[in-house]
Amino acid sequence: KMFLTPVLLLILWTLVMWLWMYATRIPAMQKAKIDADEARHPGTYVDRMPANVRSIADNYNHLHEQPTIFYALMGFAALTGGATSTMMYLGFGYVGLRVLHSLVQVLSPKVIIRFGVFAVSSIVLIVMAVMEAI
Image (cartoon, rainbow, N blue to C red; front, side, top):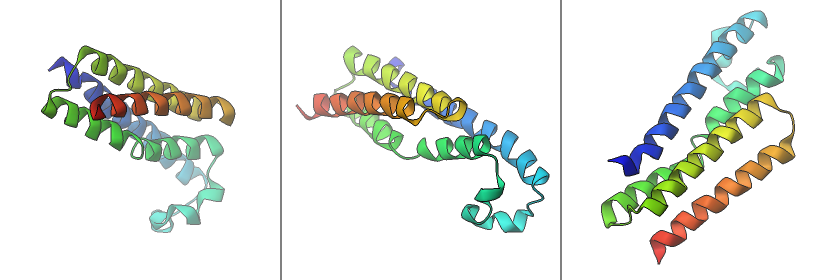
């Protein structure tokens, strides 16, 4: 059961980002006088939203991209005998890096720092995949 805890933690973090996104997006839309019907296609009003609000939404979307590989990989490991403590700790590391990536993306304009965190988290994910493949 403990093996899949990193999966649950990343799901919970994604939900935290969802709350943060709407807690900032709705007031920003109201302030910019963006009608809800205009928001049907986000790109149509993005230039009227503050950068920090857009960063939160961008990060929420990012949490539905590469982490899908992590979810599938952890599920695969759990079902096929790869649920080792090494894999679990790598999973915790991956989740920690994704949380750090979120915080850097939302709180800092330094893309190179965010890229560095993303690159390291990608390497962790690659190591996990290779461990399962061999």
